Image 1 (cartoon, rainbow, N blue to C red):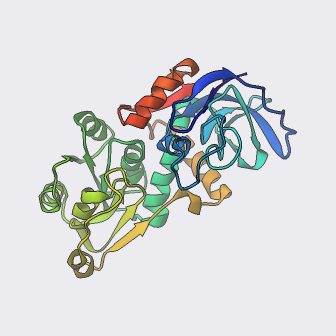
Image 2 (cartoon, rainbow, N blue to C red):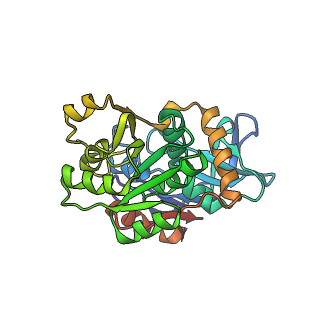
Length: 321
């Protein structure tokens, strides 16, 4: 079978012929014919050889998640440990995975859209509702509103009953996208921002103090967003796209009795992950949840991977074997 393959850490995958995976027995393991596999930041990080998982054994097929069909035609979403533990991932024509990890999708699910949403949308929903304790009628500020997590969070905050959603985005295209997805106000982020100036712009865009900040950026944007929160407000961090360190000041934290919380999908059980994926797929089928994505043929995986690694990908790239 044809598969994208990491030959050397830090290099884009190349497409090669590899032996087909052993067929699943249907009970312990299942074989999935892959229809869509997103290229995510985690894929690139794992293949770099510099992640906290350690350098992966090469060669291997990347892809930490995907969508496909079982031998009986059932559509499923599935995760893999590719790049984190020995074994192959989703960027191939077929893959064999543990039967307990596959999530059967509702009829009518768009495979490419579900793949593009994937674990990013799971993180957005759980960070908002479980970790962030979002309640109907609250105001939400979404940092990084143009990314996949941010796009999903804008829509999911609405679904959870937020009265107002404000997004902050870097590029003009991202700001337009956030507005089209329903953000009530959109604030520009700039590389030259300092905390006081950005905090003022965010405060001008909000309707009074914010209840919850969803933060996949950290850095200066997180420190500025803290200054928009009401007393007892929450900031949930689930990434560091703007910096591994944020200049948080003690006075802001203490005077507002603020809560700064961390979130990772690894906190979820397999059952919780599966239930969330089915829930999100239902909203996607109903047209309430979308994300900007682009299909990429398997032969184009190298260039698409390089774009994701360089940060020049304008949307979520989904490999279609």
